[in-house]
Length: 164
Image 1 (spheres, rainbow, N blue to C red):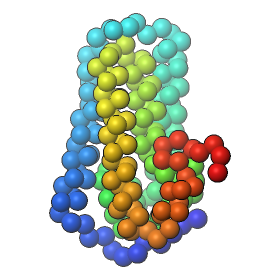
Image 2: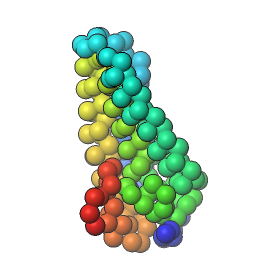
Image 3: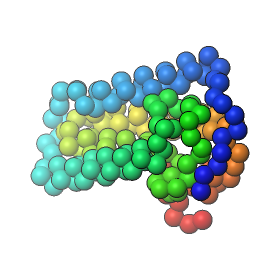
Image 4: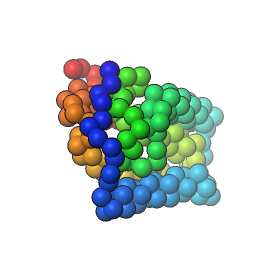
């Protein structure tokens, strides 16, 4: 199901600044997770590496699946870009923010495989950032798409709701 956008996208300068601040912090945390030297707080076993790889593969798969369904609406900014209607099919049928879910899964895999408390702390900070960012984003989505609030009540934020 697709809900139409209400009008073209014109965001206040403050909202645009906040949106790009979220993006900058997100990419900074991801950079720490990818490039921080491994401190060997623990030595990942082969099983941990395999489990971590599974999380990473799931994250990449969900991310690609989400990108395909979001299409022209895909942007690093958490503000709606006006190039698509609200997507509620594919992975968006199960969660409102599958792109964030995919990055979280990827991060879990990286943290398990890293042996690093710094990488693990960066993952925790990233999850907190996504919780704050998604709530802020949803205020703008609710203003842009009629029916978004109803969609919110029936669909989980990052994890599918088990019962409806």
